[in-house]
Figure 1 (cartoon, rainbow, N blue to C red):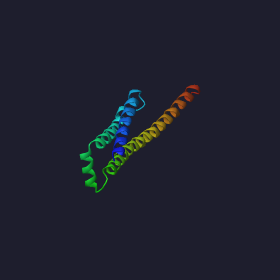
Figure 2 (figure 1 turned 30 degrees about the horizontal axis):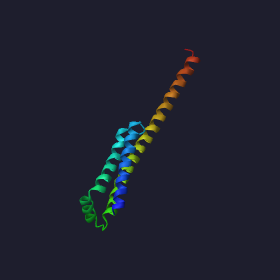
Figure 3 (figure 1 turned 90 degrees about the horizontal axis):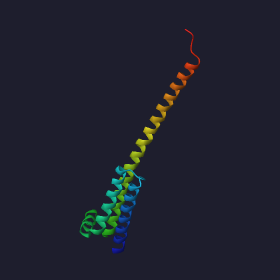
Length: 122
């Protein structure tokens, strides 16, 4: 049990350091790093706070508290991944809309350019 909890502690600290370094180097935006930092801090707190972990395991009906930790962490990361999936979907929709608007603008510019080169007689 202690090995798994120690590993989870190391994993959460490594995730916190990785996210903070990525924010510092501008590889990830701050608003997206909050989800990862929240998940990593939750993992860190649960892996070090045995009383809370025991209560969560008892509440979920799981005999082994580290397994409860893995279940909670898995659920947290699923929520984070779902959040990013919705962000990606919104960005894809915005990208399609932007591409359509650029296409319309190019069409109008091309027509203006053709009208300037070949003016219609009045």
